[in-house]
Image (cartoon, rainbow, N blue to C red):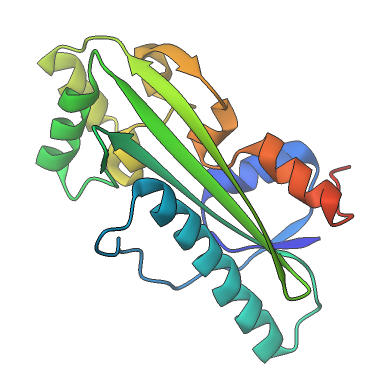
Length: 192
């Protein structure tokens, strides 16, 4: 049993895939990049902040002592974190920028267990095929990209845009399972 410091349905789906029991306890942290913070430093810090925030909440509420999992995933193009789209114009602009290019997806995990922190980072490279303005607009209209980092979901309709993936499919989806499994094994909470 672990606490998942996220309300992400994708992360929940991936944990179920691994056979991990969990309770959802979304963190309430402000996800803002600090001045001078690199994309790698940012995703690692946010994943840690989420885990620590929920661990503190578990302690304050006197809940059972289970590991807490925090995670953050960001799409990075030309050193810039794209984040989630603010609106349709912003989302379609992100997709225009990604079209026909390779970008990085950084996915960090942090497990807080008995006052110790275990962290890992996965970096994947995703190459999009060229996209027409019509394809971008039609994809946006599906509603799928509205709340996704980089304005796309690899596990959804955007899979048709992915020419090449180097790295972790689950990491691009939002939770790098290989790295997480290694941490859970280390703390004696391996998947079933």
